[in-house]
Image (cartoon, rainbow, N blue to C red; front, side, top):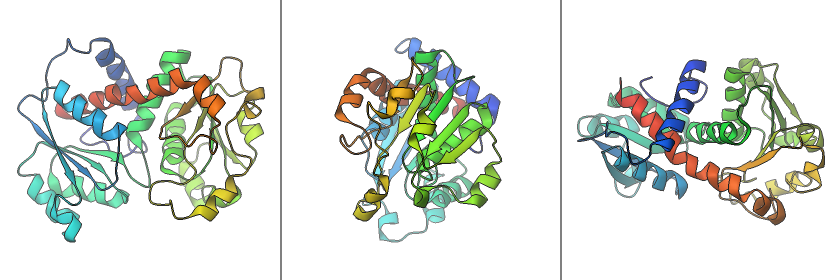
Length: 298
């Protein structure tokens, strides 16, 4: 594993190893080694962040490295420098890069031209670090994702949903996505996915029926805030007490945050499942440390 660019590109074994490693790093926090000692990692963020920035800065420091935060206004990318030129420069100075941006192609191109380990910390296509943290949370709460049904309620073709679909493809659990018709994945993507254990419908009740994990996210992804009319598509797609009536008895609710109470999730359900949701947020730290350790072992 030279980079973490997407869940799609990971192997089944790599996902399993990363979750095992994250669990170990969590259990031994403060008592482990420092595999990043003497290394500087660039955090290149063109999208704002709370959990991603804090968890990566803390994680890099705990592993002995030095994080260097670079917003688009700190470097020449903000003035139009090509990503491949920035990559060539940073690849000669730092030891790895964590990139949170819009286009997946920017992360892929940076990895190709920089020659250093590169981590996708979120793009419009995928959010692999979040999915790894979510899988760790499911294992902690339910013991396993095997023979479990996971439901995703909301935008059916967001970065989170796409990453969940690839995770289901790799790991074999049942994934039921409920999304307004206009927000569902196109047929060509589903054909490429080729996962019979993944279903997509416009009925949240069907998706949640018997589900052990109910997952949701904001209706408008970062950069879509001005598309207020899109929110109208999601009437009836809120995760609330009524929707969860037919979920599995031992179900958990996940939300990658930030949450907009009263929109994609009710105040009541968020607070009822707050312990799990904020454990999920904490697990970003441990999952990302596992990724960092895997990349420096190459």
